[in-house]
Image 1: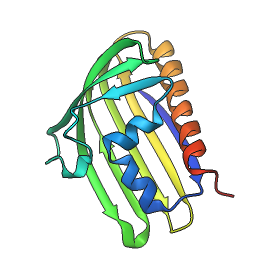
Image 2 (image 1 turned 60 degrees about the vertical axis):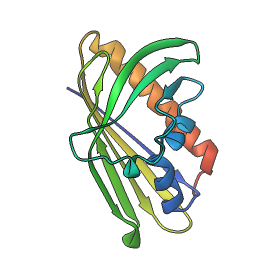
Image 3 (image 1 turned 45 degrees about the horizontal axis):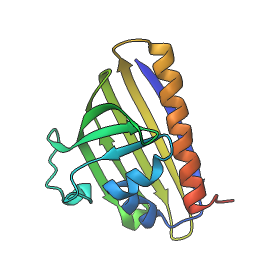
Image 4 (image 1 turned 90 degrees about the vertical axis):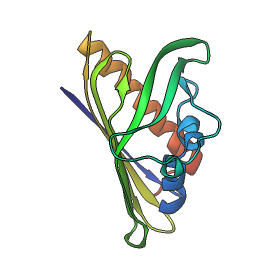
Length: 156
């Protein structure tokens, strides 16, 4: 198993960042130019998609650099907790994904009306080439966090 962690301090309200984190539109905004995620157009807010723990919320395709389909995955949320009064929310996604024996992504957003911290913890087991998978997924999530900082600004 490989575990990677990423964290960004953002100059944006916790509720706004969290709302984007649980929509297909918001997730898709984090990925360019590295990848693009395509899902059914009728589903945006994953919380409203009729999700239930352990049930596939969205079947999606991953496209690298807007040109090359690199796989697909069945996005499955196993946990979503929102405590907006106390400024904390998280989800756990455990999806079936091309090239992975197992995949677990936990995203936590914590903060207040002025700023927040986004933390991603990934635990995964690739089918092949664990060193290369670690490097590529690490690079991809560093790019996602760079996009988050560009979209929302960096908190001091």
